[in-house]
Length: 395
Image 1: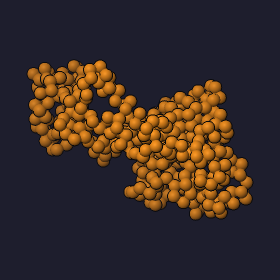
Image 2: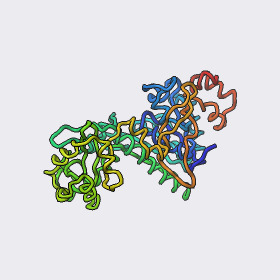
Image 3: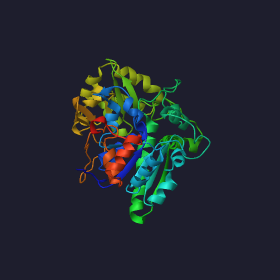
Image 4: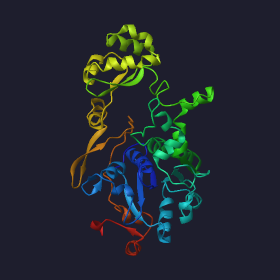
């Protein structure tokens, strides 16, 4: 039984890999019925990524939880007709093909709005639907580089550093597409008219630099890695290596936090170094004097904005994340209990949940074709023709 604030909302997800898939998982967590439309026989390439949980990709197990799968060939006119029927019964569609691809197949925004004027149609692309690069291929690193993010993720005088998480994919692609989808969905509920949401991951990554761009527009000074207040210039906002090779984060920007830190480490005379770039090395030497966990124990309760740089194993067992249920167990058909990322958006009155495991390719094919009005014989014909598919166990 679906729960969450989006209960009753149906979303068609025609995406591949991470940005649209992560957006769809959050929608499913919040109660939406998310139908993952995939190519028969192959499905989303995410399904083939390693490592694996049983016979399934661990990435797909996390990103596709709570969804149903419909295996449908959109290069066949009969598959196009099936999608149109489902679009007529859906609230939103999220896709991540290059501009114009779905329009050429007959299921672009203009074609589907004729079927369902209330439909919210979300396109996630690298560069947007127009402009000189609209049709170019790319991935997260390309978008982050073009938008300027990589230029500020380096140490002073060092080369750009590849971020350890896909900023453009997840922040600019997935999350901003959700904002656009929900805004358009609210409007559609009020007016009966849907909308087209054009999300460029490069646009979104650029927007994430709002503070840096504000500085640049005001001063014409080009920000660079290691030379800005929030990326390593000052002692009060930095990362420090400890005696055991582990690291601490210090983010004592406000005076009261900095005063508390200086007092806690027994160096109140260093309060004047708060925003002194030349004092960073002095603080580096200070923090090399103890192991990380010794510092954390010493600084606990001092309200000094200090924390650990956890690796993923440490993060997965962190007491705060554990309390917030950000690691939960889900039962896998062959692998048994398997740890899973929890629901990151907490609602008090209408909480979301992970309702079901990731679906097998085509697991919902019969159900959704029947829902779209196809009879049993018609479904069998489509299965025999390869226009749709289902798991062998269901055949």
